[in-house]
Structures are given as structure tokens and as C-alpha cells.
Length: 392
Image (tube, rainbow, N blue to C red; front, side, top):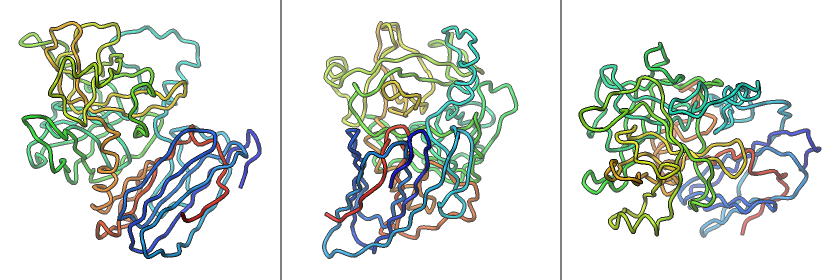
């Protein structure tokens, strides 16, 4: 299948398998990228933006015995669609499409030609995926929307259970203003989280009601590569304290800081005990650390010169922030992609980057063996048409 140049359409493709271990990959000729599922999944939704007639293919490798699969696909023009708008497609009932990692409100502001001054405070719509996790109305940790029902954050923010007064606040940068609040349905802390070593410092919050996406509420993309050289223009953001020790005070306006990723080899020179699934970054320019900036908040980076943003890390901990420079430690989101997919699917609300706009209609998944797996819509990365499907 192909699309005429400058006339994009979206293709949604379903693969339905028997209850067998299935491992799949997606490749496109014009990019170096491969996305894989984990074994034990029986459904895969592929959503492509087709902008050219270049050839791409999907390869599915299945365990023995081999079962034939059925497929269903459709395409539709998307016209001048931009992130933040919603539309119905061939997805299961209850799901809507939205492109992750875009900042339409902020980009529109830039297009007006208004001067943006560098500072520590974020602009409206600059981090539309950012959430404030609060207890008794007070900010305790940061987090990010990765779908309409799921919030990604750090495990060390919580005890073993969700406090009854916990809320997730979305859709704004000033906590003194009235913002949209959501109650959590459940908390998923990584089963191997170690509070002493901070290994596996990652958690998910499932909301009791879905976020209705808009230009100010957009999910972040999950990363598809772990190489630090892949990512550019990295930022952290949060409502954490504005200083260290007794002089620290909480900020009610979202703060930001530009970061530089550091190779693992260099980071090990400073932090020999760095856990395997963590990464390092330092403030751009080698300044002193941020000191108490939002635990659980995101480290987001853009992919080359695209306008798409990916959450590369989760703020976990920091070495002595009075040192210059200090190294901040993040849970590497790439290393937990499979865990996120599995945990959301097992709990009956599988991860869809589009999100769920009607939870009651969402497909229930009774077991791991029957779990749904959905790949992210990397719209700006897959500029190719879908032409061939074959079993290896």
C-alpha cells in the first residue's frame, strides 16, 4: 500500500494470534529501527503514518507449532491533523488516537514569533505530559502521562499501597490554579524494587477515570533506543524544591532545566555502584545539581531534529548536589518497556499510546498468556508504506 506525497493517511493493522508465544519485529527501509514484542502476547496493533510510497515490512516469528493468523486493516486520510486533536479510527471500542510526544500549544506559541527567554520556569504547554502526584493536596512527586489511564513515576515515592488521599493533577503548570484531578485505581510498583540500592525504581499508577486529551494534555512517547547519542535537547521538569536543605521551598510553578546525558562509562567513574538499569545526566554547562527536584518526574529528550519528545529517564536520585557538576541518576525507561507493556496488559487496561476515553468499553485481558500488546505510534519515524507481511 502507498500514499501520494503530501497526502498522508493512517493505517491501523491488527494481527490476531492463537495462544502461543509470539515474537515480532517491525522494520522500515528508510530508518534503522526495530521494535519487538515479548513472548506470551496474542494481539498486536500497528499504527503507521504513511507519507511516502517507500517499502517497509513486518516480520513475525512464532514458536512451534506455527499457527496461521488473521488480520484486519484499514486506512483513512488524516488531513492536517496535529497532535492534541482526537479522531475515531479502526481501534477497538473505547480507544481514541492521539500522537504522543508533541507540544501543539507550545509550538503554536513559538510560531507567533514571540521571544522565549531562557529561565527556570516552564511555559504553558511546554511539558503537556507532566503530572503532579499529590497527598492531602500537597505535591509529593512528579510523573508523566503515557496513556489516558496510566501514569509513569518512581517507586520510591510510595509505600506499598496507594494512600487513600492520593490524587494525580494534570493539565497545567501552576499548582495554585484549579487543575484537573484524577483518583488512582491502583499502584504497580516494580516487584524487584530495592529501596536501599534504588534498583528498579519504577512504578505505574492506573487512574480510575481516563484523561481526556487536549493540546495541554498529551502523553509522552516511550523511547525506542538506549544509546545516549540518539537523544538531543534533554530536559527535566517538576514542582520540586527550589533549593537545598533548610532553605528549600516548594515551587508552585513548573520548573525546568536543560540536561546533558552522560555515557555509562563516564558515570561509573563517579558512581561505581550505579545499577545496571539506570543512566546519568548533568545540568547543561556543568553547573551544580538541582537538589530535590521532583522525584518520579521525567527526563525527556527529542529524537534528532524532530519535534517529538520521548521519556528517556525517571528522576530517581542524585549524588551530592552541592558538588559542581553533580550527576543525577535516572531509571532508564527503555530498559522497562517490556515491563510496562506486560503490567498494563495483565491488569486489563493494556497500554495504548492513544489512551482510553471510555474505560467501561476497554477490552478486558484475563491473563498474561492472553495479554494484548500494542506498539507505540512513532509517527515521525516510520515514513513508509506497509506492503508485506510474512512469517519467518
